Length: 466
Image 1 (cartoon, helix red, strand yellow):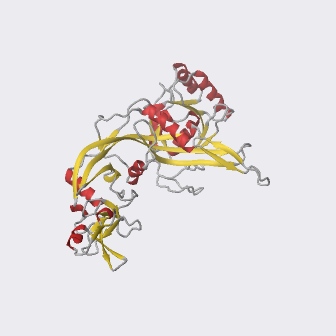
Image 2: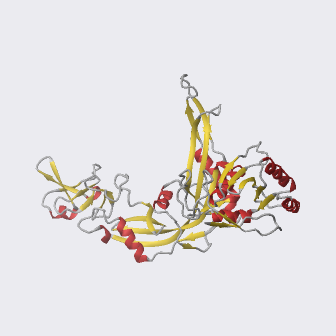
Image 3: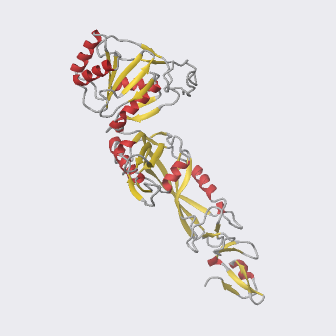
């Protein structure tokens, strides 16, 4: 059972009401342990089982009524009917509770609410045939509004003035956390720095599958740690919901429905869409590990990054749709579907410093580089030239790479069709094409061998690549 403090009027009697759980669909009273409504069989979740974060300062004013509706429903006030619109006559919501109807007016702006809004709601309450109303205002209330509401109590009409702090309490009882911190700084996180031995072992695990004979790949590397840099990333949790209609508003031609999507942005607010984001996302659940010092520069504060996130998501989700207005007429129309910023809700933003460990590697006569990116206690190779064949410049992968045991060059393995490497046909040594020799075998065939085997051969040797 959820306990909730319902304010009557600022300065009036401090009335505590116990709020029972009600079905959000039909308004039927529920038992404390109910998982389904006994009247309509609607499934009912535990209202405080999971906390949802809402950045209220970025919440669009047009969608605020829907948010308040969800808050009252999840807090167990009863079934909530949303009216809204220009002809709502001061009635944005109607709560159908066991005590009767409650008329709700929602105001999401910085200015305080004056007496005229209370008078308007009073008229709406009377016209609905009830005696109770609620004004929800994130900007507070004027003294005149409070005084008028107190006078109505003496007449048997209750107009409850719910400011931001009281709305936050109600939301919290329903598992919703309201965050209002425009312009303030965001939480900053990073990971503990790894030791050299741990880094070396993790790195060698990536190249263990490289084909290398007779010396194993891990024994050919000379690894030198250069430095540790920190990649600044904003991680955001965002929902987008919007429908697009044809010209007569009767046919849905496109819709965007993305709930709690994760998006990453760099320190300048540019969306990260390359492999860098893939490595972050691959092991992400809660990416943070411990709180960090604010030594690395993030260029945007909460308010600025929220604005940038909305701009970029509008751009990335804008598309042109082709559709057939009339199925009987073979004519195609086009419409640009550009989501409104008011359709984008930002739930959470974190600043994360991702450690990048930078290495230089020597394999015999060849040098390479590698950058390991830390994310959720997992090291990922974010950038390297270890998977580039130095013969044909094509890409290899961990299972198709070979290390030349003569010069240290990495190439496609001996089974690849590119013929960038070979196995010595005498000793089995892995060699690249540049280090390969051949000796004639019969009249038309060649026997490909490594340089030491070629030096020991009594036959005339020739370089495979000239």
